[in-house]
Length: 481
Length: 139
Image 1 (cartoon, each protein chain N blue to C red):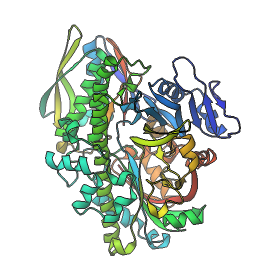
Image 2: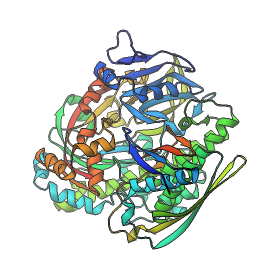
Image 3: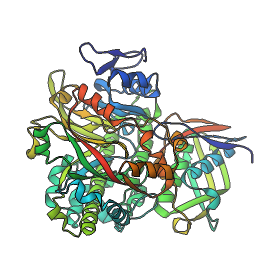
Image 4: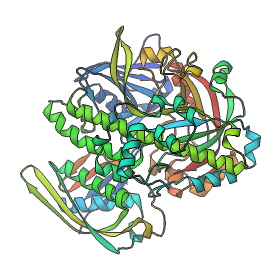
């Protein structure tokens, strides 16, 4: 265990890294003792420390239980900064702006789908452009792109990709205010013009799962989850457009850092005051990229509904394929939080962390406002995923944030050494999971054994009080980029 | 040309180490190393060439901008590089400039899909010296 960390008294799953050197606040890691031991003296801890140097950072530099080494922020990093004297950090949001997940429900049960799983996965693979360089059927002119960047998922709805109520069940209603297409470069536009409605590669996926275990029947009921129910995950982000926005603004921040005299230990943390012209422009561009990502997941959901409908010969509406929720796990948000007993608006950076607003929060849809926001946690493709619910404690201790996934345990090169694509497919198939992937390399790099056990991460999240366990889901079919 | 590259372990992403006998070679190997992460460069038909020109205020920024510009050309124009035909670096005060000519093809001319997408070359743990560099890619 790192000598830099101390367990917080009376808190089994909270660890503090006391202020040292140039840290303006302490570091806090939410994790079990096992996770902390496994972490050891990792670079992710240096990153928790570096983030604590940010001007105007409030309370602590935080990390969720799925903490691992990122770039700038650790993955699993959360930091809130003051709107008056704090900074906004592109490296605290990441290249894949508004990478996130959504979960579509259905009235189908496991046995309805089990026997069709291969043809269903093949149908989805055929419908959804997957992998690198695969263009989607949508081509956006610059004018249309500007509309996507302003409206987000609402744009997709106007074009017939989705159902009216989808918007209500999405963080920010699928579109962030304050987006300015004019702050998005021509390069970013060019990277994104043919990628709307494409999955991408890396860890992005579409997954068909069934509900294996219900932990809290009351909450599950409010969410519309029941045992053996078949559900559909969509995990993707803002594609090349978002990556370019981050790249472009790291250049801007580099100059801003010098201009505003901001000194930080890592160049990937280059930032500008939230209230500066550079900071405001980045926020407007970031919001635009976030909206692209919401439009993207909306179009992908449409393809999923179509594929299921066509495959089973039914109308998707008659199958009850409504959206449970859509969460962003790489994003910057201006939110109201209690800081040292005072309500204030702050700039929350979540890099590989999910918003987890508790019961009663006005940003939680009415349908489940009294139980808390659905927190969607995809695991790996072989084991499990979870639906959790946000808590009041998360509002008090983590700026309303929880974990975002299992977190990688092995590097991509290590993963490739452990298993071949053929063996992996066979092993998954013996576990009842049918997989289709654009490339064999992409598949083995995302092998379940390259990830930490999501059960442990979720246990730690629940133990720290950041979210409550509602349901555990098991994979049946996966499409990988 | 002497030098080379290898891939190092990084849990979430990919880290590339390159070396050469001067900065020109280091930049060249950085390009070849990055493309080897994207595809098997040996199989890319060299049926066209294109020029890339990029500036930076220091060697780090130059390298990051240079690699990222190639990613833009891949995603925006479908240009897949199989080799570097020419590369020249200039240093003028605090302005560095690299000019290079790549050979390769458009993405639709490839016989198999690309292996992976690189989101960006990052500044994370970036090390750049005239005779070598280490770069972390977000993938």
